Image 1 (tube, rainbow, N blue to C red):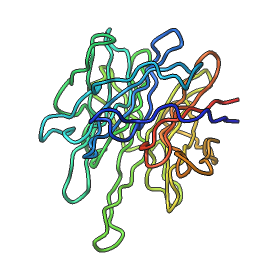
Image 2 (cartoon, rainbow, N blue to C red):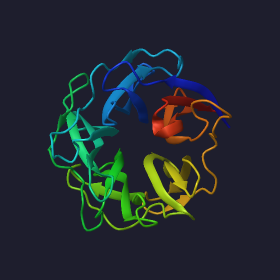
Image 3 (tube, rainbow, N blue to C red):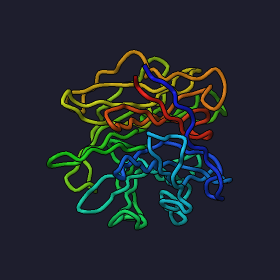
Length: 302
């Protein structure tokens, strides 16, 4: 059973942090303190990375908030000139590697996004782009959009679970194009060149069109995934799945048991959840209404 501990962070206070604290991503700093990365938006709806630090032992007490973006917008015309959303931070080659979703505007469809990489030599030093091009972009396996990478570093390789669009459609004449995307898997030896396929880790359910933000971790029992899904007129909820190899997944029929509240900041949707394992307890960081516009909540599994 999940117990909601309340909303622990609301965006604001800076011109680049006008709304949203989307896709919470915890990074342990040691001593029971975590840096929670998120994607925020300015008044023009352009995303940048931000963070705050806290301890689950005192979730209502925010220790520090970033006063500058983790990574700013890319240069004009680049794949990330209209948005940068942090998705995964991993230790690699003695550095901190940040995988992120970079957004740009499009014409026939509303937007395009692909996966970028930025690196930092150590904690406290700003991230710098590895390249002005995406580390994972369009290919024969992913011809439309890719984003929201979740990363695991294993013995001899890195593994990525990410969202990939399988099509855009207009459901009626003059209607806004609608995206269909779900979760795929890729692996890499160096973290830069990725091997992809056309295999869908999470096939679409009935009326589903958006299966987003995969978060994967490994235990002795295998691999476990949280993802966010929606379909028909339903708003986002968090789904779960298990796998022995990280490629073929068994989806649980019921969503994660963190439901919307009767009213307030998370009364319309529960989305983009990420587990946080602290002091023998399992927590969930999650977003509420309007895709994270209203902030980040914390729940405890009892």
